[in-house]
Length: 279
Image 1 (cartoon, rainbow, N blue to C red):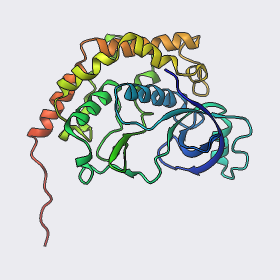
Image 2 (image 1 turned 90 degrees about the vertical axis):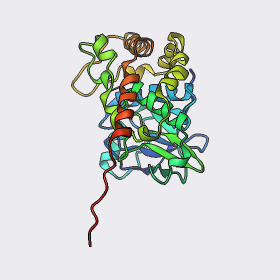
Image 3 (image 1 turned 60 degrees about the horizontal axis):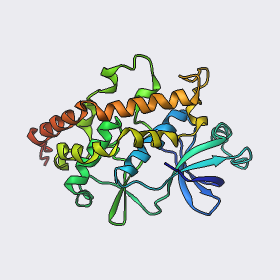
Image 4 (image 1 turned 120 degrees about the horizontal axis):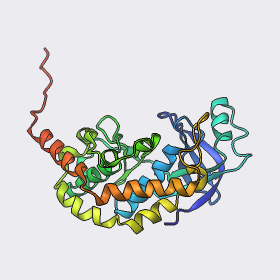
């Protein structure tokens, strides 16, 4: 799959949210992208997760802003006065990852915005997040933006957390049921997750997954945290490991589907907690 690549021309607005310190960056054609930098605290693997999750979401037909590779040259950000940001930009030369900036978008509210997500879409998003082990779609931190009458999924850097430790990558780790799905913001309104599995799993065959992983730049695959070495000797070996993980996870027994269904049932049978009346 081809991901567009742009050269960053202006560091527009810092977004001091989370550990990745993203920013709104203007690129060569004047477009704005919310960009995550490989030199930030979460490192290149958070960017790999963004690229893989974003492409998977797009292929499944889920709403996500346009994904792009944002290239930083050696001169970018030299006029930035904040030394912390200067250090991040200096360490981020080469490819970074951006999502098209949804100007004026608002954060999803589980109460006020609920009518914007139908039950099938909610079930599809639950399935997607369980598949990619995304821990960041909770009521406290939905990572869903409302733009007009549409919703968009953002911020998948914490997904695919297995790749922070490749040791012991056996069937049990690949086929984890992902218990954290019980905290998913859309679980209470999701429809039939089994039906979502039937809709989505068949779209991710081995060829599609290979194409998705092929779009990750070698420079990100071989970027390792300071003081460590890349988990594999070559970018291609690293790429094959991702292909193996994703293919086996989606073509195997998929226990994450039943885990989501069980969590959904638990939500439905748990009495709502009400606040005590105070005079």
